[in-house]
Amino acid sequence: MFYVFFSLLILQRITELAIARRNEKWMIDRGGVEHGSEHYRFIVALHTLFLLSLLFEVMVFEREISVLWYLLIPILIITQMIRYWALMSLGSYWNTKIIIVPNDIVVSKGPYQYLKHPNYIIVAVEILIIPLLFQAYVTALIFTILNIVMMTVRIPTEEKALKKYTNYQEAFNSKSRFVPRR
Image: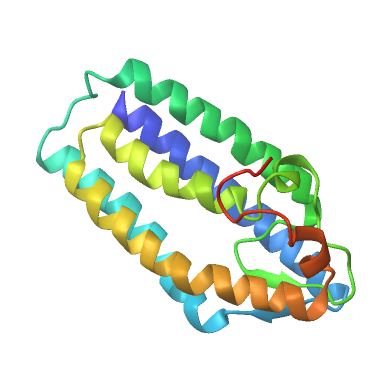
C-alpha cells in the first residue's frame, strides 16, 4: 500500500509543480515580482528530502501502516480537500514561490476568508500525518521541526511582500495566521 500511496504523492507534487510553473509565467507576464528567492531552494530541499526520508525510513525499517490508520486517513483526506479548496481559491495566483503582482487585490475567498495561511497549515499537517500513517516517526519529527523553522522565514517574507504591493493589510488585518477568529 505504501508504494501506491507514495507514487500518488509524487504524482501530486509533480502536477502541482507544473501548475506552479504555468502560474509563475502568468504572474511574471503581468508584472509579478518574486520575493524570497534566497530561501526558496531550501524549501525545495526540505520537501525533496522529506519525500526521500519517508521512502528510506519505510523501506529500510520495513514500516507498516499504522494501527491508527482509521484516524490518520480521514485527517489526510480532509487536509487534501482544504488544500485543493485553497489552490482553487487562489487560481492563477497559487505558486510555490512568492510572486506578487503589484496593485492586484489579494485573494480573500475560500479558506482565505478565515485564515491568512491555510495552505501552510495543510503542508504542516501533511508533513506530520503522512509519515505517522506509515510509522516513520523520525521523518515526522525531523521534518515537522524543519518545516516550522522554514515557515519562520517564509511567512514573514510573504507577508512583507504582500503588504508592500497589495491590499493585504486591509484585507487580512482581522484574520489570524493559523486559527480562525470569530
